[in-house]
Image (cartoon, rainbow, N blue to C red):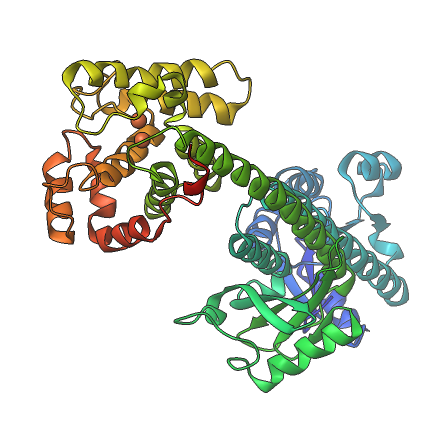
Length: 502
Ligand SMILES: [Fe+2]
Ligand SMILES: [Fe+2]
């Protein structure tokens, strides 16, 4: 138990004299060096009010007969079943023992002790209160640990769905923060946190929350105080959790031997928290980092395979080389501006990589025709949407099913004038609406040299087509970031596979 100054004991009795005698006995009593503070209720209703506003009551000394013959027993039932105060210890005291048979009452109402008022001498009262405080302390500790563990377990699934290292670090720091807040004496603290990686070259920041985020990216050790550096280096050297002053830091090592340190700093001194729980949490963190690494490896490999696949397809194209790579980067940036959840961003990566896959079904002759195409050739070209859909839609994987929808719909327009289905508005898959914008931006000015490739011209074009070709909600989010979109497009290499073309 930490941060406590006294133990609250609630005396519930309709006889004023019982209150006075009890308080007199408990007045000089101490447990773990802390005094007793008595709260007084003269009826079960008054007791309910006090219990509702003061959550940290350790023991209730409860009279059975007050406003009714069973008022005390009903209060005991209310404490357990409605107020769900399970750690609080209830000692029943009665002047009429015949009214409440001991074992029956204790079982039915989860009462921790039962005494007749006549047996409660000063010594007996002291003994029963001390043993109740001890068991209250133990039960509270178990409940806190249980709440901590539940938090760790609940947080696990969130951590395994994260796709960026910075986001993973932030989520972990926020969970670490929540874990500390379970301790009621820390609930008012505001924490800032940073997670770091230690490798051969030194210590580096992975992610941060609160003050550590600052205006820009903080560098280690330049932007850290001496107090922070000391604790970080001590944790790194001793490979264990440390709590000191305003800081708590924990160490973790991943399966592939990556070492990490997390530091949380409160806005005031921290009382002792259970370092075993913090250490257990760090094990969970290392598993999350391992899972992230593994997933990243899988994602990077897949992306490289997609890129190579596209380069092979491009050897057959004469127009707009490097198009898919640019659409991939532009649409991912649009997804970022739209604040897509991680899961959707991942689907967008697949969908943008595959959006023009149907071009493989067109003849070489068709693919080598220069743009703009004749109306007849354009009708043939339009078939790449259906072909792409047919290729991908047989997959049972969700990502490929979405990619199939996007391959089919990425030339549909918001106003219903696109192809192949003349879909409009929200009939069009949300990711297809994003790729529609990226796709057209990439073609804009590339294959139509008459169009001016300048920021004002592109902005004017996007605004003009908002609500026509494009989803207005997408345009609204990107219109102030057209400069970055243009840069993204211009920076992508046309193709790394140029020489392989035959
Ligand atoms: Fe296309
Ligand atoms: Fe395209």
